[in-house]
Amino acid sequence: MRNLAVIIAGLFLGAVGCKSAEKAVSYTPENIVPTENSLVWKISGNGLKKPSYLYGTIHMIPKSQFELPGTVRESLDRVKRVAFEIDMKDMTNIMSQFSLIGKSFMAGGKTLKDLLNEEDYALVKAKMAEKGLPSGMFERMKPMFLSTMLSTDEMGGPTDNSGTTSVEMELYRMSKSRRLESAGLETAAYQMSVFDSIPYTLQAKMLVEGLRSVESDTTDSDPLADMVQMYQNQDIAAMQAMISAEGGMGPYEDFLLKNRNMNWIPVMRKMMANSPTLFAVGAGHLGGQYGVIALLRTAGYRVEVATEE
Image (cartoon, rainbow, N blue to C red; front, top):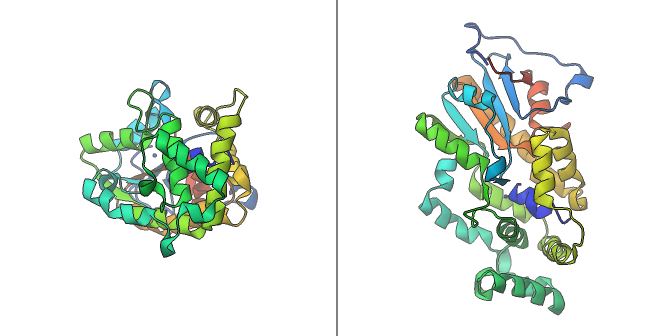
């Protein structure tokens, strides 16, 4: 449970290819799920005239440890579009951000005080006060959204100018300098609505447990450091397993991971058929039976580790 905020904050890409389209590719059942450690994958076959690419990102990483793989840099010279989970063009637009504020609030007039006992409510209120946020600002916010806000601040996220960077933002800057089209696999409004699939009471419980685990943690374990280490090892299977095991999410894992991955495949199919695309999504979405790689292979695409040329 203690890593959930990191995951959600972490849950809140060859040659030009042949001239003729390639046929669909069939994988044996034991080869559908990827076993290689890699963050960058080449997508071809199944009617594509030119390959597209898939890059597993991490939403927060220390600046000193960020390095864009050479295969990603090469892919940027071969694609016409970069597609993120959410179009970064919208995420950097102030008007788009303002339109999402209302979606961060709980429905039905629910407040955090309705969901927590006195002791737990006092803990959250004190924590928000430490961040300079008055109770009127956070009282109606979805608890999972608050978890994301707090974890980002606690772990040196975007509010810490000296600590971390966003892989997506770095990639977006590079794509803009190349005048590449920007796109999204889903909307920010949809991502916010995913929070509504998890009962507010469970969200509130996770929020409190996350705060208490940080206060009582006497080990040297650092959730962000653990995630970054897996990322640097390019261990997409471990990252996917960490998400699946985190906090006993049970059926709610489908809303946060599986369903979203499945929704992305037809969107990716359409984009790839239109023009070669680099897809940049959280690395935790790549591995496993219902990861993007396995789903693309099941759909008839050849998905293999990208290599520098």
